[in-house]
Amino acid sequence: MNDQLFSELDLAALLSLSFSTLINELHDRLSELGYGDIKPAHGFMFKRIIPNGATGIELAEYLGITKQAVSKMVDYLEKSGYVMRKTHSTDKREKIIVLTERGWLVIKAKEEILAEIERRWIDNIGAERMQMLKEDLTKLVYEKNEDKWSSRLRPVW
Image 1 (cartoon, rainbow, N blue to C red):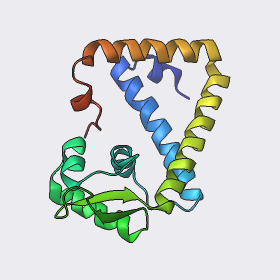
Image 2: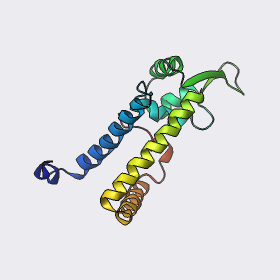
Image 3: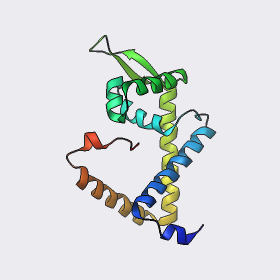
Image 4: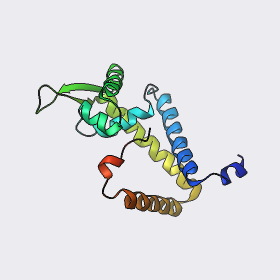
């Protein structure tokens, strides 16, 4: 490891690299478990689908992409067995996208892998420092986005 390189990184770079490190390991591990067709963007989509499904329009708004792009993602995930389209309970013209059993299995695997990664990070920096880091980041994010949660909790493309 080049300590000088990392000591010169600014906060934005460090946050970005820590996120990338976590996501890359997550997806490497998911691939080892047979979920190699899942990409980071799919995880963001799953976050909006859980727990009761979402329409294409809701997903497009959440992800900040077009409804056509969402439709292509849903087609891909449907063919891979992670989601399915169902008739909406209140609007029979609308479809709602829900997770299948395979979709829920990848969510469970993701949660277990992320918990394992966090435990390893805690072993590295200590439980108290990890808790402080989470509290500090929560405070900073909350203060900046207090009245904008619904529009801010989406991926940054």
